[in-house]
Length: 276
Figure 1: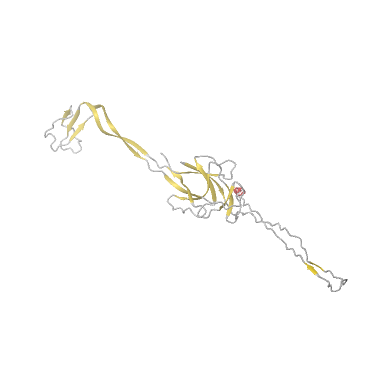
Figure 2: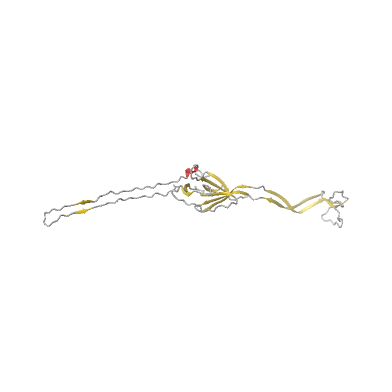
């Protein structure tokens, strides 16, 4: 099965056009104080008149003090730009984003954890197919018929049967009693006069197909939580930390192109196995 990754690079200092889609959105806090009016206390004094005997003047103090009331509005949370970035969410049909670790096959990868706790991808790439070889042999023959004559030549003491045969025997049937005719001498069987017809044998395939050799392995860690503070359609995610690559990717099965009109433009193809 093939997996296609669509990635964007997450840098800390710019220099990559993909950063345009990962701006950190921050909202500056502000307060709108509502100040009440100030009323200073006033003293009012009324002096009485001595129009009636025994009456005294009276004095009344009235004082009113009003304080200031201040109302503060809290600002929305912002994505912490020094550790995080606003990253475009995966569009329909795609999964992620995930943090990537790529290394040689056989190297022990780090474990997923922290802000990317879930193992989402375990894939391979850079494969080589070694040369294979195939052949076929035949098992014992059954139902075959022989016709003609085979000749058994006698060569006496010549170990290579290089001397001219001084005598011979003709074989015209499958089973012939030879008695003690062989002795310690050397014999050569000439079957050029025989022909075989009909019959069959069980085919035996000889196949050598070495396994596919992979060069690199890929680990993708997902499950990151949105830290908040980004606009709709994006999430505030932590920037990957070494040994993970400085990028976040979305992925899907199949050999497809990167999603259209998306910030995820860097395409890579990986596999989860091979079927021969």
